[in-house]
Image (tube, rainbow, N blue to C red; front, side, top):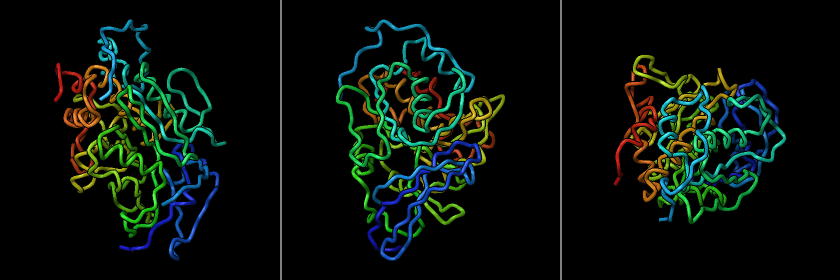
Amino acid sequence: MKNRSISLRGLLLAATFGFGLALPSQAQEAAGGAAMSNTLDAIRGEYAQATHLLRVKPARGSVRALRLPPLPPHRTWMSPEIIDAWQSGYRGQGARITVVDDFLGKHRLRGDLGAGSALLRHGQWVQRGAQMLAPMAAAATHDLRRNGSVMLSGRHLNIINLSYGMLAPEGHDLSRMAWTARERSILAHAQEGRAIVAKAAGNDGVALGAANDAGRVDYLNLALAGRPAALFVGALDRNGTPEDPASLASYSNRAGSDPRFQSQFLAVGVRDDLTGLRGTSFAAPVVSGYAAVLGSKFSGAAPGQIASRLLETARSDTLRDYDPSIHGRGEASIARALAPTRID
């Protein structure tokens, strides 16, 4: 392992849009003689790019005390399980989802989450997906051009959605990464259990923590491994059922052999055939929405308890040829997670 301190300035953000659009924009910097070119959450040849400079219990109201608005519309890309959760009154109230993503860049992608075709930035799509699943959750954004700490709410269950990665050539010492205040705060929140961190697994078709075909590793994945409130989210080709099991999408990173990643890995269906939005970028907000919905029922639970509940109740019977090195804990199930009267 190299012992040089790694500067992560010059990160190249690449939002996975699935349209085969590559708008070249790169920033590189020599770090102790080693040139670094970093990408974020990119399917090979199927991404749009935006440059960005950076360096390598709360009181919550009872559901029963609230007057709920009409039932949200269920969209075809969603798991049918969310309907029962909404009907039971669990719609994200008492939670706040902070999406760390691109909200100011010039590049947009076209998609349709069921409310009509639109042309939005990557972060806007990610946030919209989470909000549609947890419509009563508070929403916050943190643009990737802001290097400051990600702030939390003192009145909510905090959930942080990361549909990006920080890739650099393999072989660097993780302990010497010169993270910005943004990543330092995220890592601390996940370690200390102050927020659930839902991290998109990535779209290189490799095991978490392994190098992709270009020899680059997502160091943000490595840094989050083993942190109690962190979840890694892979993409399935559909929402699985025992009668029609799902498979991991061909582009999605898999859990791999590292027990830390296996124990923190969930997968959910990403129906790009219906939405036009492809990649684990759009799997992570599903789990963020589920976490908010779960927090609406278990309003006294800590972030680590909510994350553990989602992992413990994941399904393997809805997956084709279930393998923990591929699917980790399995397919996230909001119905199973909501089943008990309390969680400890």
